[in-house]
Image (cartoon, rainbow, N blue to C red; front, side, top):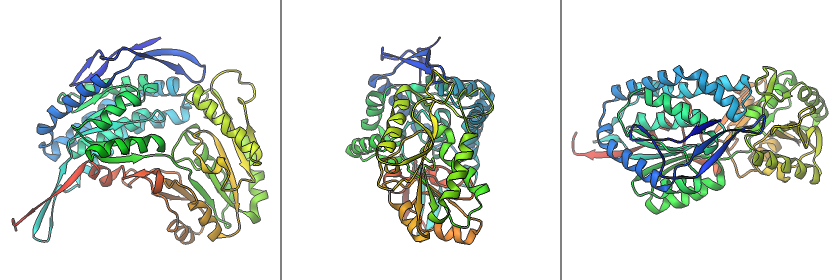
Length: 473
């Protein structure tokens, strides 16, 4: 049983003002493995005050110094990779095949930001004016549980690269991972107050960060519903806001696709991170003329996918993060059946032979229409919908008929054709024949999938404001 009773403010591990505790679970066993003492609004105030004090000096640091700081943070997180990997498996339930990538991603985002910063020009000329990109101030960074360390380090990297100081509110469900990351970041020896990490509930700590007048910027990753609440709150003080929210990403399998490649790619896109991914390709669009063949291949492929013990190297789908999330996914599976979708793989309940743990059977529905609940709402679990289309124009229409627009996938051996389709998709990212992440490319959503972009120069500029000085040339 691990007891985490400290938060990180002004360069030190301190006891929270908040007195409430939250149980931490191993989702593969349902056992309580720890407890975390939660911060409250007073702790948020203290963290914001520390970041505010540190901002004036840090905002004037030269670019080279910030690059050195980012690389020091990178090396510090690398040094704790094994401990972080273990926590990702135990506390989050990520399969070992996924968990190692997640642990490495946490350090990679810091070095990626340093590389981007090397070539970034904070001053440029616009006609007769000099334009200077200036840091906004204190940034509030609110992160989710489905890639705790990656989101903490990624948002912090962009904020520090820009010259902002930060207050981070991670999910209380990820406190063991957060504690390891915090220890690592502290060991880099940066000046006190540059970053502060306060684990607490969204409706207390998150809400206080969103409303606090000394916070100039909010970067939030999470649900669309919470994102809207944050946006309304932040509007009172006209904070700059970046929101990375939900998705219902289409995988468009064009009629010339090679199913030997298309089926594995579509299932990997849908079941990535055990389905707990905002970018998961949960709507698989297949030409009606090849639907029967595609379904047969999916049935065979899903039968080979192992859901279960995250420590088994053969496992690719681990447990849901919590009982609440497990119940949510089960509810959507029942809704799919009740609304007339045809279950071709998986279904309700746990996988065969598993009696405990928040495991879900990898599930695929066919005969889905785009107006069904399972095609409209984000499930956040390993539940996929196959939707048949008549022709390419119909596929594009279905793909865009959603309130979301975070990511999309196109599968075709004809790259020129795939690019023409990609150009018509309303999404912040479209991946053609690949699932590979590109850290230099902006990431964010159209429509109700969010506001603003992360990663690369776009991610750094989300924490900057342009100032024009005229009459100097």
